Image (cartoon, rainbow, N blue to C red; front, side, top):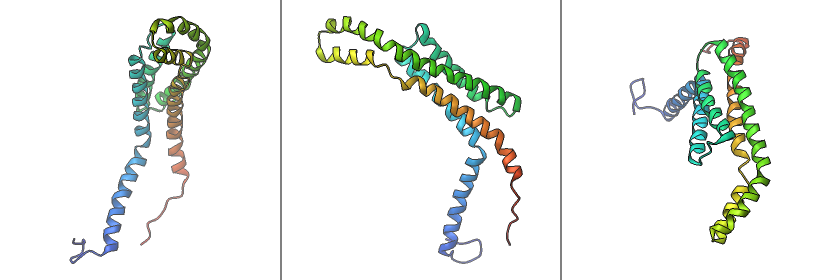
Length: 181
C-alpha cells in the first residue's frame, strides 16, 4: 500500500486512515442524528400499525391505537421539516399522542376480568385442553406493554425534537477549537 507520500505506508498511517474513515462516518451520523431518530420512530409506529392489522385490532376503541399509529408516522415525518414552528407543534402533538398509549394500557388492564369470563364460556367448546388454556391465558392477560410501546415511540420523538432544538444553542456556546499545527 502506498501512502500519499511516495513509498510504502507505515503501519501507523494505515491505522490513522482507517480511523479517519470511522471519524467521517461518526461525524455524518452525528450530523443527521435527529433525522435518523425521527425516521426510526416513524418506522416503529409503522411496525406497530402492521401488528395491529395482523392481530385484527381494529374494532371499537381499538381503532384509537390504529389512528394513533398513523398519526405517529405522520408526525414523525413532519418533524423532519426544518421550520422551528412546525417542529414545536409536532413536539406538542407527540406528547399528547403518548397519552393514547397510556389509555390503551388502562383499557387492557380493565378488560382482563371481562375477557376471562368470556373465555371461560368459549374454552370448553374448543375441545382441546391445551387450546382452551392458551385462549384463556391470552384473553385474561392482554399485552400491557404493547400500548405503552406507542407511548414510548411518541416520547422518544418528543425528546429527539427537544434535543434537536437545544443542539444549535449548545454548539454556539462551546468555545471554538483551533487546529493545532
